[in-house]
Image (tube, rainbow, N blue to C red; front, side, top):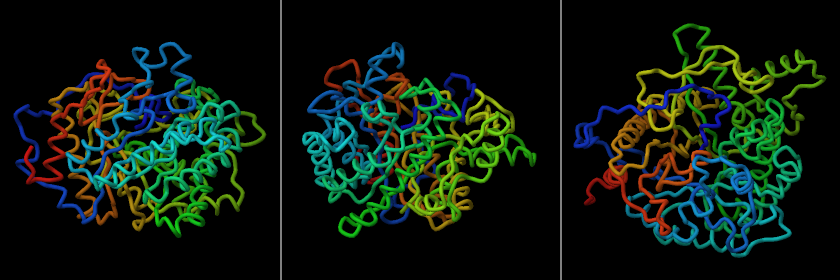
Length: 502
């Protein structure tokens, strides 16, 4: 799940109020216009997504090493709302069977999880492999198989081992080899149990920690550090993809790709200038990483190259802040996908106008973001409800990179205060799933699955436990971390198995 409060591009001044979706508490959403999972293509992947750091806890148990989020939370006062930590989180390290039972009982056929790099390799390197950490994930995968649930596994979801950050992290080119070595251990020990892989989740947020001081590792080299880290993230992804393709795919028969994030960006007005602004915003947010992998030409989007090169020259620099790939690197990165993973929550409106620090990606992109005041709100100021945006961004992806690329919506969800009667969340999923079905049926989009965020409330990064996305509630004041079904879980159960008794 993205820490949207840290969005580099979406520095929006939203109002914090929560507006109603005009739903009566006694209204059964979907009864007037019923549709079910059977309306989607056969084999469609309906699942939930989580991330290791947000649910596992056990931060220093059974040989796990320290990661960059551990370091930030334990050493920087007030880094997280209410000084919360993820030391225990949902305690899923000990309660994973209970979580998987929730998935099974609800009717999901897929579970997207991430692996903790520092739980498997405590120092980040292969000189020490934590057998207990590997065994934990083997047990999770066995339990999923036992319950007939397909794992979709992310190698990296923001929790870099601290020893690797001590030598520069994603800004140090040696990270490319370290990531490949980590992936090799994972494929060798877990690969026979997994058919679907994601290398890196939301790379724009991974690299934001090198441009800001509000996201680990808090480097603060805005407009420089993030671009250097981007270069190494893309090379790391490509190297792992090529390794899997050559060494592991022939026997393990899996698929592997990236997972991006971001809103669908629409023009603020009908003007041609705002249309150009919206397209530029999409290139700076989505194309920043996707163009190098999914486009026919590879490399960064031309508009990014042109703008950042020009700005760097005007700043008196002797070379661009955006590094250059060699022709060989462009070819090595291009085409390293089996599908396109995309985390979609919301929509934004765009017009031209520089914001943010100079230099920064916000200044480079030169976009002012806003929202339609008629879009319903959530408890997260960045999340406005606009279901049509999901269909719109799928159309943009198909037009930009071709309509033959399989798409998986790897995250989507609604933020509230954790209430059991979460009718707004039901309306969110109902609306977004209907737009997704339109994209598939009416537009011909090649979509393989949708992962809801999330099966349980969890640690929402800098927001701690103040923002909730789960379809099951957790009482974080109770040491036992009890799970309790919300109305949205009942909605999903009825959607997935309409004849089931709730």
